[in-house]
Length: 339
Image 1 (tube, rainbow, N blue to C red):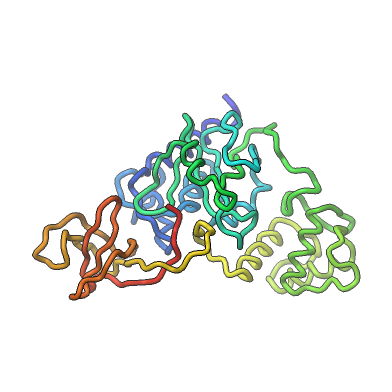
Image 2: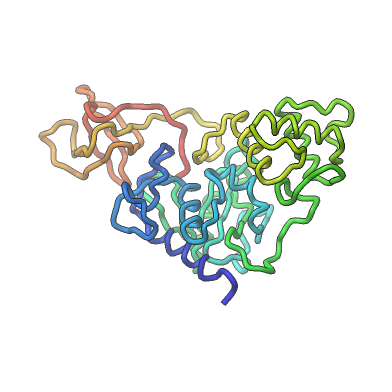
């Protein structure tokens, strides 16, 4: 057995154990991947919450103790801590390179690193599993799912093995990814140039040399200034703590929240209905005289279909529609989410 095959299989099993048990959310409840309120890894009885990135993050962290990042943008920025096992300019992964537990990243948001917008977990047998909207996670045929996203803006482009074996290929060299090695005075390479570019973007000055790819006294001083501003030891070396703070500062600058992203297409905001009561009946029509279809819960959100004259909201639940009272729900605007 490979070094960490069992841990990867466990992450895949944990993901599959939550299929169709979670409501899609980008709010605070996304931390309850394994069910609210207990959130116990392996729990398959309690209703949970997730979006695409929190789902894979929770499964991998529970299986291997590895925090890959709170959203897809953070995960791609953190890729130096995993192994990129497949990368393509086409639309489909090379499945021969994949193992269960690997994460598949898709384009879809031009404001994020490498235009990342969505993530699924490979679960073997030509299938992937992820949570893009509605009730999930869901299992899909990998090739058919990639085919549905086969455009330059939304395509599959990269697979990362976060639970890697010793000797796995694909580890970046010293001149590739920022965050993959300690940088200090005398270092050089494309990662140094990336660091300098980010410092300039955040307002730290490099007046003499700019982003030249060499870590000299000017860059060291800019790093010290950044470290002081973020309550870090101002030693001028760029290590893991400084890297984490820099990535967070860039997210804040770009307005990124620790949530999933939309599919990257420029589309208007669409209305959703947020449940504000405790447990609320969703009925067949806009009145209490209609029969009950299901029960929805506080904190859940659903696509808005229509509003009745009495104020009741028609919502989409899986493949059907239902009505909820406006006494226990509120209409909000929300960006279109990944289907």
